[in-house]
Length: 221
Image (tube, rainbow, N blue to C red; front, side):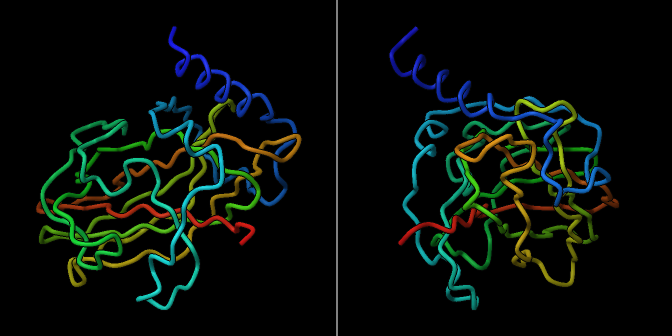
């Protein structure tokens, strides 16, 4: 085991050790949980996120002056880059028209029955929300379920929102979605989460897309 692998394992164990289902955050409704248990991957970026990240007002052009960082692999310009793709999910050409990260070439493509889960990344109680760009490049609308995964908990997938992807508006920015970083914690501090995207409804001709996955930390500036 290399030094990096050992330190990453220790960081992951420490982050997961504070989670306990019996001490769930009271702001989370049990009805939000899907009953799924999803394992998540760690990448080189996982350990790097267990410290205050570099942030920028990436959405200031869209009347959002909050500071954001990009979730690991969340611009999809380096392929799947640690994401777990299921049921035909793929990285495809075509990128967000909003381009908050600059001009890109790729996005996450989701068809009926497919799902994708991000690599694990660290957050703490200062990370309340996230936003994503959703797109419809086909001719029919789709519905994407956006969820948060909490490694270390049983049945660890919580639905954050069901987002309609409308063919009338090919790309749009989601509203602010709740991350609920303290769910299941006995105490505060760094913990691992991941984000999951699934297509619930996709008629023939649908081509739902996800791009520019941005996390909003309330940091001490």
